[in-house]
Image 1: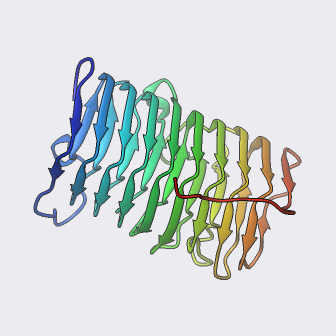
Image 2 (image 1 turned 135 degrees about the horizontal axis):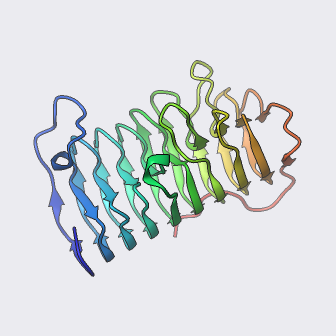
Image 3 (image 1 turned 30 degrees about the horizontal axis):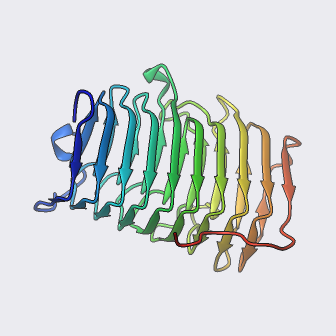
Length: 267
């Protein structure tokens, strides 16, 4: 997709499954190359050898709405390369081979992916990766999403800066009123929600609030590495081995759950 105002809607994008994950552009189902005011709506997307939907070249002012995505070998929805002002709503993603919905900003891009809202999405049964992630995003809101099942034991929600991939840190990220269910693992060390930095850059101004976390003997929320201005408030955690696992960082404030509504509500 290129130019101003392109749209794709009411189609099925399918194909013979690739024998293994691929990285070439032709193996994505849709790539948005620097387009503005674009729309992807009501598609059935299956068996992508790479990402199912991916941004490139500073794609901006787009919507990804009411799509069904299955069996992607890479991220199902991957926002990267300076993407901005994108809304991702009402999508159902199953069996993602890597992150279900991801914001990723590499330092080589020269800027963070920014002003992203993902709301009212369902991401289930990841084969690999995290159900949703922000790895170097700015001004990101993840709200009222239902994340369930991670077959490799990674986090449902992953907020991070990673040295091996030379990413930016997270800045101004809010994760509010989501449900995280059956993810994380004692083997991987991932909690249901992870706030993590490899140490090169600190994550700053992170809010994890009013989420419902339902687990089977793994950690609820874990943070480690440099962080500033992190608020973890009113998250209801049930069935965890430990509700909170942290490194004593004084910039992380935890307010435990007392009462009131939390988590995903079907729209």
